[in-house]
Image (cartoon, rainbow, N blue to C red; front, side, top):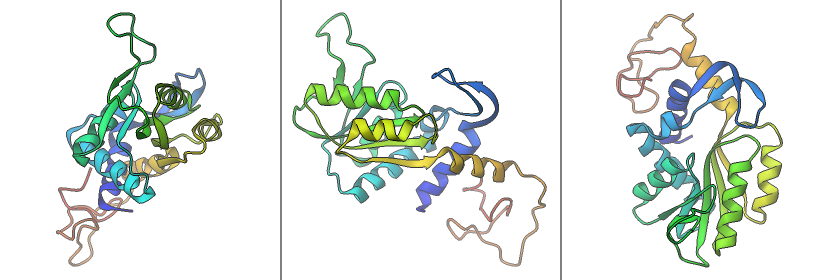
Length: 222
């Protein structure tokens, strides 16, 4: 796992993940909640989000012209990737066509036939991701990849998105279990901060200030 990916996971676990009893937008109940926007709209989190998504896009070899998704979960991801890349344009998909002006549903990049990647923050049922895929194709984009920041792995979200995205692949950066396990590590205060001689940060090699849950320097601890 890259340094940026590790740092983004720690930030999500710290700022976006909560245990408890919650009702999701789908109407289902859950013992945890993930609000990715508290991380993707964080100054450091925005940069990390852009770096991690761009890294995965390059790894997949999609070579898109633009990146976009359904407002508003995708908004900070689209902007972050566009800014970090310095070359990928962005577009946002309205939940419904506006009733004034041009009445368009796609805002931003408008090049029919262009290769694009659809992004979302959390995938549960996949509904918002699918809306974006369908709107992008209806407009005339070629969807070459679909990505989400956190996949909840429930309510048939993955098969729903994979079916809608085909033949484009669907990639998740993290699963909800990844974030949950990191959250549990961060909140486990049963272990004292006892250091071995010359303990260093596992991310950058500078002197560590904590080893709970792992050796990290002051700059990389959350």
